[in-house]
Length: 531
Image (cartoon, rainbow, N blue to C red):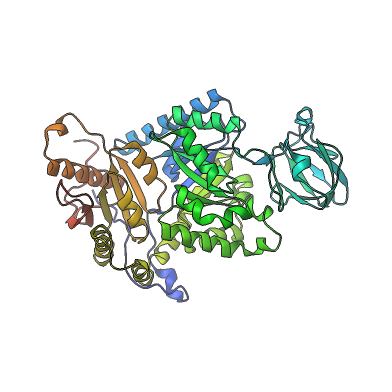
């Protein structure tokens, strides 16, 4: 049986202006994690299995329009799909995480009065926006319901209102009463069910965290959801309020979505308080001042640099293959957007509202192909040395070991870095070095396992200790974790017999950090299906 040779890893300078760059070998495995939003509660287990095999790392559940029973059944299908993937390849665990999003101040339209998929809104006409709950399912070309109980307080005459990411643009003319405002249609378009509503330069007076948000947090705690996304965070007090509600137990990750200009002003405090940052491009361009929306590429680079320096994951949401997810048609602008995001240092992507599994699979395959080609261009020798120069001297012993590990892995063109970790801090520090190879992080703690799912180039593995391991020495127990990681990677086809890999581990049981870097060769081969 001939093994398929894994991807070729080169540690060299990259000149993207050279035409020969097209002849460089591409990666076989993606480094960038992807969050997929499952909007269809009737999705089958076999379809979820296809998404997992195509590269879905984190499953995001649609919480606004699903019942509690739908969410529980969907969680069960994800578990069954992961087990089916394990049986197919012959491994014990499939690394997949779960995610939910709080509603906070996100404003949506209601349901259409007719049974059509959309209704046309003509430019130059006038219509009424209402927050009366009786109009929830009666949206038409003359009256649109918006889920904002403080509508008349937030919107003043002259405010620009965007519906469906600039599909329809309105301008407020007058405030009729506490429930209604009259608007002029500046740009016409098609109104669909439950579209996003954004108002430029508005200070929201409704509570940021509602009772419904707290119910979602309770659901996440009870069913061990790994990540919670919180949008519209202006001050760090919102994040602290959620953390206080959760408590000091094993909590989900708190990812903050940057949606407003105030969020950009307090970005340093928000990065420090949260576990990761999301640039919510489906809201931010329509919330900030009109002159600032043309600076979005600069803002994207700026936030990416801050997150990389802080060692926090940075995700991109909104507008990613939007047309391809809806109709299956790919456009050059959407492909260029993903390429530029990877070059800007984005850690991962969030795909919104995947109703059609076939289209979602095509988008995942497209992102895979883009990442295979672009990611080797990002991890260049010049960029690595610049990352080393950014670390302040003198460094402590833990940072020195981490830097040595990344340097040895690049110089030896190692396939893997295996890192048994307790708290995940070493993986966070190694994330700043952007190693070209994949980092296999082995942990025994569930909250660390959740954290590691979000980092770029990191594949987390959950090591379950058996009864026989209780009587082993510390050295033997550590070797078992490393051997467990190598067996998993051989079964998945990431490495073959004779490949180099690096281990970053503690030198002794008394060490408080990883202080030993070792170079190994893979000494096992893939087991036969029939022996």
